[in-house]
Length: 134
Image (cartoon, rainbow, N blue to C red; front, side, top):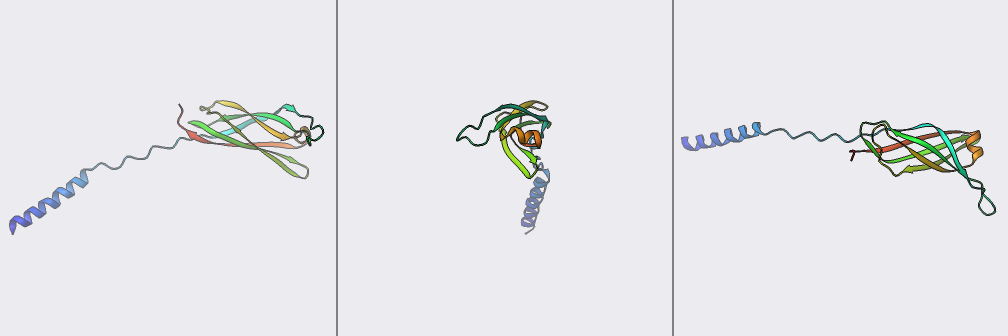
């Protein structure tokens, strides 16, 4: 019986020691982070004439977006809203690029009339997914 108790105690001791000696789980790697912002104002690129059957003239504008985050930015998308007298007009845009930290690129947005941009106040916002830089 003494031998059985000693064997059981020894097994418990070894099991307890082995649990204490296991290293803790490694912390998860931090997720890459990117913060993008739109710089300055929009610039007029071109306007179509909206001729017969084409509806209201629509213009293409461009702007600059910058990655202010510590990692690369991908999946960049934004919205430009022009506040006019009776509400607002919004257009979505996206950039098919990966930006390194502090890198900039151009985006284009289509669908505003030149009058809306001249009389309204355009405001753009952007977001992106942080990725590990290649």
